[in-house]
Length: 264
Image (tube, rainbow, N blue to C red; front, top):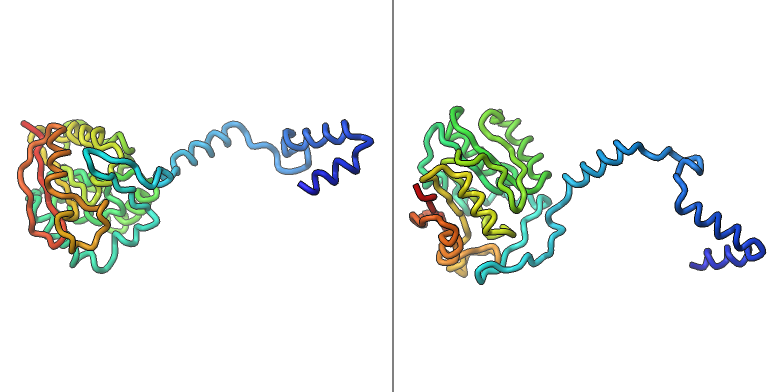
């Protein structure tokens, strides 16, 4: 502010001219001052499109709200992707035991919703084999990029299909999925009704929806409360959207394996 005041004082005899030049300096194209030319409209549009794709969903409010009496947890950022590959995860979550509970077979079509970097997707791909498919979805383009890199290194591109979805659109094919799994993900869905209805539409009649959730009933599970769910709460929310409860498999140390079915 001091510089602007000083400039106007020096120019007082020519105040009108100085103000005009100052206004032109703000609105004139940069090329008018010998700098780089203004980018073409196409380049500007392309840049804006790229920026839109790269929007980070974690700019959402830290407290996304509540649903059916439960606080919705904020989505885990791609910046914490290393936590998904932590050395202790194998012992804490026993992913192979979890997948055993799904009774997958060769040729199954599975959706790993909220796949992150593909920790679960690659394990499922090995169970369904080259005749099966795994749609690995995530709302974060940064996660999808890491996922693609991982499946290339494992040569699983023909089985795993990385899919960028949104908070309200699953981007899954309608009526083609045998099983949908959400590993520590459902409690972060900001639009639970739209999500569940979209998942139900993607499932075949009789297809299964499996929620893996840290047990809120157990205070010894060392996870923040908003990132845990009780079986009762999960059933209340999912059954309200037309799914049938099948069973809750308790073979894992810290997590529920809650299995629902789309009616035949």
